[in-house]
Image (cartoon, rainbow, N blue to C red; front, side, top):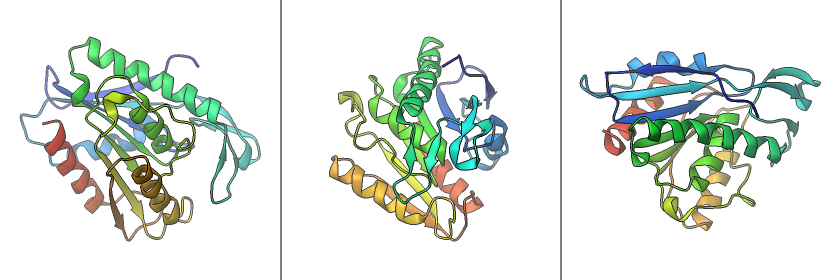
Length: 219
C-alpha cells in the first residue's frame, strides 16, 4: 500500500502525545477534525492529532464502486466477510505513522489509536500487534474483524481498550460491539464498553467520554 496522506493538527507546540484517528468507509480524514476542540483537553495539553485518508478501492457491498476504504467488505452478514489482507496492509500503513511519531519524539506509550467503523477494525489489528507499548485503543461503532488472526504483541498484552457503540446502529449492529468485548475478554484483555442512544455516528456525550480517556492516559 502506498504511503498514506493525512491531516495533522497540534493543540500546542512540541507535542508529547499523539492520537491517530481512522475514519469509516467512504469518508476522509476530515471527518473527525471538528471533534478535537470538543474533547475538553487542558489548555496546555500538547497533543498531535493525525487523521489519515484511506486509499480509494472498489467495495463489493457497494456494487464495486470505488471509494475511500481501509479494506473491501465482501458481505454484510453478522460476522462481516472482509478482505483481511487489505485490512492488514492498512494496519501496516498506519503503523508507519506511529513509527514517525516516535521518530519525532513522542513516546510510544503516549500514542493512542482510534478508529470509527472500518477504521476501528484497523485500530484493533494495529493496537494489539504493534511491537511497542501504546497508550490505548479507542474503538467507535466497529467490530473486531481479525480476532482469529491478529498476532498479539507482548508489549500490548494489557493495552487499555475503550469501546463505544450506538444502540440504534443500523450499519454495525450493537451486537458486534458486544461480540468484540467478549472476544477481547477471551484473549485476556479488560475492555470497557459504553453505549449511547444513537445510530452509526458519534454524539457529544461520547466525545466527552473520549476526552476523559485521553486526559487519563496520555496527559
